[in-house]
Amino acid sequence: MRKLNLIWVTSRMHIEIYRYPAWYWGDVVEIETWCQSEGRIGTRRDWILKDIANAEVTGCATRLAFPVEENNRSLKKIPTLKI
Image (cartoon, rainbow, N blue to C red):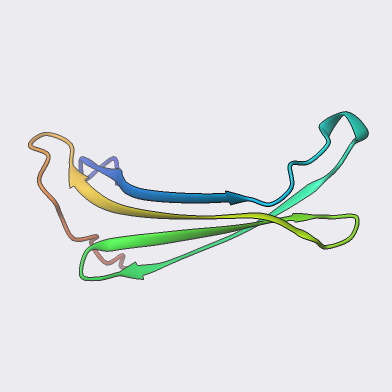
């Protein structure tokens, strides 16, 4: 994206924390993440935070972002990659 002068702009973010990890007790947190398209040009990324010890979900988050041209701040579609 840098070569195309595109940057991600976050338009919305929602975070829910059900239980904070006790870092001083050595809690280990696993973060699962995935993304999917949202509308014509947006992308949504989701996260789930889990306590490794008991697989308890301790939090979740969602972010909606759009690619924007860095120079003139106009919305752009994400180009398809040719492999």
